[in-house]
Structures are given as structure tokens and as C-alpha cells.
Amino acid sequence: MFSFAYDSYLKYGFPYDELNPIDCVGRGYDHENPDNINVNDALGDYLLTLIDSLDTLADTPTGIPYPRFHLDSGLKDNTTTENCLAGAGSLLLEFGSLSALLNDSSYASIARRIVLNLWKKRSSVSGLFGSTMDVDSGEWINRMSGLGAGQDSFFEYLHKAYILFGDNQLGQMFNEALSSIQHHLRTGRPQCLSGSGSPPIYWNVDMSSGNKVNHWIDTLQSAWSGVLVLHGDLNEAICHHAVHYFIWKIYGLPPERYNIMTEKPELYFYPLRPEFAESTYLLYRATKHPFYLHVGKDIMDGINKYTKADTQAHLFPIKRIQNLVKNLHMNPFSFLNNSQGYEFVKNSSCPNIKLTTSQYPMNDDLWKATGIYVNAKFASLPQYKL
Image (cartoon, rainbow, N blue to C red; front, top):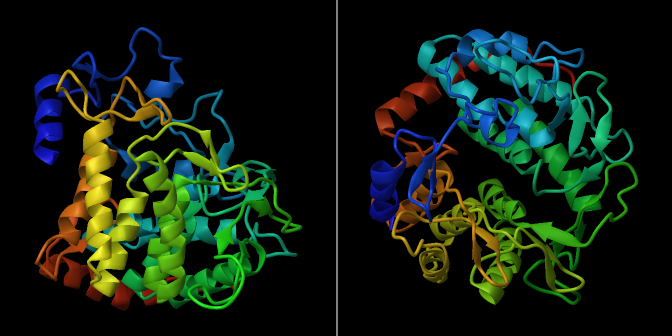
């Protein structure tokens, strides 16, 4: 499957950023319409010079970065000031590794400072975060607190950065966030695998009151199972993963949003997301139970059955789960790098493979060198009061 998708991209799409898998043509920057932000925000048509622009990116009244920054010309006059929690706060691993490899702590410091500025914006009542914020005013725009779109990787990165870099303050922050999440978002029996009552569900709630604001969960929330595995909450991870697997089995692929109360999708598309595959991989590594190999096979079978283009050009996202309408573009990164990476490692006999969150493998020598640097140097970064 990987060879089919990758070879087709090289044949029909390269050097464009994306591939239209039905017409077998590449898709890149829209030169005729520079205002086409749906394409041009993601496909920038420029050389990556982010390292020289980091200070400007986070140069806001709140110290929380803008969501979009043109590396060639800087901020545009019409740049939106609304950024989501995950988009602003998911820089710790990449920038931390960059600091380690370049022997320069400035990048890790920027990422860490952004997270600490976000931390100050938690609700003083519940300890929860909202979804999106105006980075100029510091006011929350969307006050929904959850574990899915716009929020998922913030918590993931807090815990993974603690594990990788040995940053105890980030570990403390994750534990405090986890306590608020368990208290306000989670319902169901206290012990996931035993006792009376319904199995646990993590809802979307108002960040101040903790009251439910809707009854849906989304596919990005399935990453939470993997975070729970890394935290050692194995039984909770098993139950949470089972909820998302149940939804997957109903349709053969998961809808982007599924309403728990009506038992129907609210958003019908499936953009080849890798989060459920990651959690399945982590649960298999933690339990070695063959059940998760079967889940992995279901993931690959569903993708292969429903997303393979009839033209044999590529794999495509699903626009509508119920009747499996095909979408007209494919971002190679999400599928080739993430989903296939997790499936490879889950089934690999090599126990020492180390992967970043974007599924880039690192050999032991590089990983150890990074860890040694981080543990020695990151301890000297300023420890802010929580």
C-alpha cells in the first residue's frame, strides 16, 4: 500500500505538494489566485527559513503565536489573530529536538515560553482551556474544552516533551491538566474495566462551567488513548480506544464527528487521519495483545478498500462516509508518513526503533545524543511559576 501511494505520487504529483488522485495531476500553490488561502496557506511555495522568523511569529501582546506567517514577507495586514490551542502549543518536540541537534537552546525556549503563556490562560475555575483564542487580546473565542480538533496535540506534547526532555515542570503541567480533564470531561464508571455504569466518555464542555456543549466526539480525540498509554493509564486507554474502534467498525472508516446520543455522524468526511493508528500501535506495544494487530489490519483494510482511487493514482480522503464520495486531493504527509509509519512499527520485530510524533525514525545514537543534551542543558532553562 505504501509503495502504491508513494510511487503514484512520484509519478503523477511530484514536485507538487499534493496530488489529485482521481485526475492524476499534481496540486500546489495557486499562482493565479494568491488569495486562495485554502491552498496557499498550506502550500507556501517558498524555501523554509522558519528559524530566522521565530521571534516575529510569537511577537504578539500575549506571546502566543499567529497561526499564519509568510516567511518571505512577514505578517500580512489581513492575518487572522485567531489561533487554536493545539496549533499554538504543539512546538515542544520539534523545537526541542532542533535545539538539541544545533546545541542552541533558543528554539526550545521559544516553544516552552509559548506553552507557559497558554498555561496562564486556563480557566481559574476549572483549570480547562478553550479551543481558539485571539492572540492579540488573549481572549478565548471558542470556549469549548475537549480532546479533539484544535486541542488534542497540546496535551500530547506536554507529556511527550516531559518524557523526552525530562522537563519536570511540563510533567507537572500535564498532570494538572489531566486532573481537570478527568474531573470535568469524563463521565462513566470510575474503573473503566469493572463496576456498574456506562463505560467512560470524554465530552466537550464549557471551559468555565464544565457543562456539556454538544454530544459529539471526533477522530482526533482518538489520540488520547495513546497519551493515556504513555502516562501508564492502560485500562483507561483500552476503554477509550474501544469507543473509537466501535465507530470505525460501524462504517469501515470513521466519520470526522460522531454524535454519541443520536448514534449518527455529524461530519461525514474522513481525511486519512493517523491518530487512531498511533493509539493502536502504542496499545500493542504496551500489551503485546494480538487483538491490536487485528485492529491494525482493519485500519489498513478499510483504507485500502475505500480510499484507493479507481484511476490507480493514489489514495484519497473520503468526503462522505455514508456513500463514500471521493475527495479530489491527497496530502501525502498524513497517510504516507503517519498511518503507514505506525503500522510498520507495530508489526516490526525491531524493538529499538524510535519515532518522532511525525513518524521520522531516529537511530539509537542520535536519540541518545539528543537525550543527553536535553537532560544536561534543558534543566538550565528558566522555571516559571505555575
